[in-house]
Amino acid sequence: MTTEDAQSAAGTAEGQGPVEIDEEMARHMENKREELFEKFGIRDEFPPEVLEEAKERTQDVQQEIADEVDERRDLREMTTWTTDPIDAQDFDDAISVEERDDEYVLWVHIADVTHYVNPDTAMWAEAVERGNTVYLPGYTIHMLPPVLAETVCSLVPNEDRLAHTVEMHLDKENLSYETIEIYKSVIESDARLTYTEAENLLDDPETADDLLEDTSVDLAEKTELIWELADRMHEQRKEDGSLVLNPARDRAHTIIEECMLKANKAVTHELMWDRGVEAMYRVHPQPSPEEWDEALVEIQDLDGVSIPGSTWDDPRKAVNATLEQAPGRQLDKIQWAVMKVMPRAKYMNDPFGGHHALNFEIYGHFTSPIRRLSDLINHWIVYTNDVPEDLVALCDRASDRQKDAEQCEREYKKFLEEIGLDAAAVNNRGLEVIESED
Picture (spheres, rainbow, N blue to C red):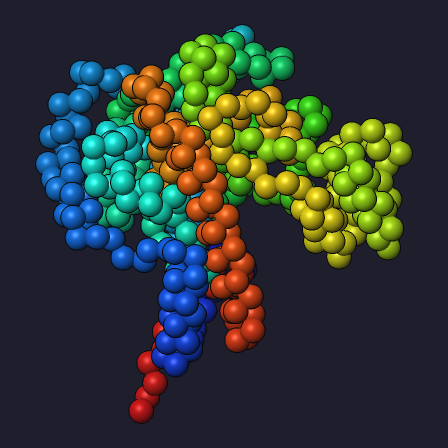
């Protein structure tokens, strides 16, 4: 790495190194976590039988995958890659893309977790108990045992992996779905990109050679194509009335966000309209007109902020337009004004009501089965077309556990700030305990 490259890297989370704390601080943080885990009923340790079952499912994996190839679509020759934070512990989604004369084809490959975790396993019961992975700054409580999630369910580069693929053929003019196919596959990821590496690749395509074992893979070209497609999807979503609370978006995050939204929407479209089955849909009620007015008045009264007059009829478009023009110092206040009036989204077995913030008539989660119960269950429903008898209870369970996880995270971040730690820095850079010299 050149001196210039090193200086550039130092401005990123991975370039700054972990946040350093002493042993006393580490014990103080551990005690606080245990207090919060007890308060919110979060289990930090896995039962022995769950760990043993997970360990057994990682045996002879390559032979098992080889035996599955004939029963699945073999996509191993397709250019495929993952993009995740620098400290990601598992890689549950990968993408592929092609531009054809009259269409785009977007493949979103999701780790086939239900091949290993099904309703007859102890791991499934434990996932129901936990509901989701809990992400605290510098500390993670997993929904599934890491021995499974970080190995056979992780779409690591240059190894065959079982996946559940969503193949979407998109109209070139309006990016609507022409056809949607969802099927089991075998893939081989060509590269594991961090968000920073993806940004660098878009700036300098020649960096692709440093990221690949196989230099014949057209990763730079594909990354440029997926960015152009994702940018169009993002702008179209805004035009359609989707609320975008973070206007300062980088390209790498936009690519992943838009591809996952497109895949989630495709899957729940398939489940509701083509199959007519119950599933774990994500329903987000809308604020009342009075609540929206309250938020917009609060935003309009902020110093240096003006809501464009042409957007008042659609509060979501009004907020989007205002965020793009407002001074940076006011962004948090605008976001908070909106969040205060937003009802909580919840999981339901019927999509009635849609997702207000996204402005999607039907929506649900599919792309993160390693860390969310809802996605794991939707994988099972897509594969078997069999709806669990206790689906309503499972929806309530997933909603409640998500609420607990979010509250736990908020209280832990507040605690970190009280003891003088920057929660964002800990979250982005991790922690390192420095032993005392005594």
